Amino acid sequence: MDGTGDPGGFRIIASPSPPFIYRQHGRLKVRTTDEQAEAKRVEREQKLKLYREATEAIFQKRQEGHLDESVLELTSQILGANPDFATMWNCRREVLMHLETQKSPEEFATLVAAELGFLESCLRVNPKSYGTWHHRCWLLGRLPEPNWTRELELCAKFLEADERNFHCWDYRRFVAQKAPVPPAEELAFTDSLITRNFSNYSSWHYRSCLLPKLQSLSDSQPPGRLPEDILLRELELVQNAFFTDPNDQSAWFYHRWLLGRADPKDAIRCLHVSRNEACLTVCFSRPIIVSPGMETLMLFVDRAPLPVEWRTPDGRNRPNYVWLCDLPTDSFNGQSPQHSFSLMWGDVQKECVLYQGLKESWCQDSATDEQLFRMELSMEKSTVLQSELESCKELQDLEPDNKWCLLTIILLLRALDPLVYEKDTLKYFQTLKVADPMRTAYLDDLRSKFLMENYILKMEYADVRVLDLSRKDLTVLCHLDQLLLVTHLNLSHNLLRSLPPALAMLRCLEVLQVDGNAIESVEGVVNLPRLQELSLCDNSLQHPLALQTLASCPKLSLLSLERNPLCQLEAAPEELRAMLPNVDRILT
Image (cartoon, rainbow, N blue to C red):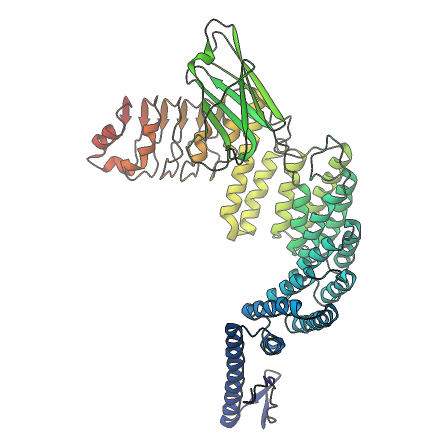
């Protein structure tokens, strides 16, 4: 400021020409004198002084309620130099809302036009300024008839300068939604930018948002799943991209999205009734919270509604695949030859019948029939994916250390047939871990997930309730909601460090073997009503308190703990007997 109240401006004073110029490593170097360094310091201090004075003046006017055009002028001085000063944008919004009530529509329209021009100048200073783009969204949202065509042209201009400016992409999605612009036109816009430069994650991502809006769904096609003709066309496009630049990750990510499965329809996957526990357990296709304000379940026993209290297996009131309720004893009247249990969840219904003399009954959807772990393949789609697999293998021969290529080969093998290509998949995982050692833990978890999916499918094909996952180098347990009916589970000699709370979903589990891991916590072994035998030999359990949750398993009779660090504690046997009085045998 100049002391008269005029905010003035921030002017950059040209420095005198440097007197000393020399070459170093082929580049011109300028040696500044002490006087020049001092001059630059003084110049910086002057700019900082003006900046602080303008900021203080704005805050003073704001505090006094003087929301006039002088505040716009002052904030423009600050934001012109630093568009990321969020408080200044807040001040401008307050002033504009105040002036909107004071000025005529014509005067305010002129003010808005000037504001839009100012915003464009700020974007030229910093095209990735969160505050500037947000302020433009806010301003246009207050106009009765915004010029959306002009805004689309603005986006095109900034994306011409930097096609990967995700701030501008976010703004374009906002404008396209408000205009509204047909999804087909926006898809064509992404085509033009991707064709110009395949390395454009924002454009690929926008395609994933647009394509589901173009599909004409039949009643049998799940929402979010692309029609086959569109999917095949996109696979060809993205294949061109990652062959053009194999090391660019954006096209590989998009390819992974194409191979993904749509969110499943709401379904009751399994309904299980136990006579001995007088309990009904239900498994859903997605985690839910059962409460009046969230999801509502209606249970009918022998066609009559029965009000019950629902809870999760681990007792935590959070989204869960599995919920259960206690049944009154008269639900199992011995005089009736059978009892029907029907559950309604929205428009979804499932029923199971418990016959006289049986201890339990269930009705379960098949993971194989529901295609839970793979996409449905027509002959044409299978041919295209097989061709892509061969092409990726050729690329891998040329680029043996390309991690994206290796991961895509694994995903293509899974998409084609996870069981047929299981050995090949495991081999490629080993190669990928060598090529990408920084993500070894992630790859181990992904490998574990795929292996568990395969063994769940094999268990279903064999129609058994016993699952042996020993010596598979598992680092994580996945899809435990699919193991509701398993009675015997062997997890021995893997790389597990804990038993997660999701293990409580295994309501029928009787025998659990987890020998030879690195288990430090068994918090997931809780409220398992049928668990009789638990073997935890050769693990890393340090103290008896780590086994405290086992007291919630009423039928546990045999606990094996040999060769754990806690066995070295002299007081451990006594502490364990006191903590688990109902366990008949504790082997240490």
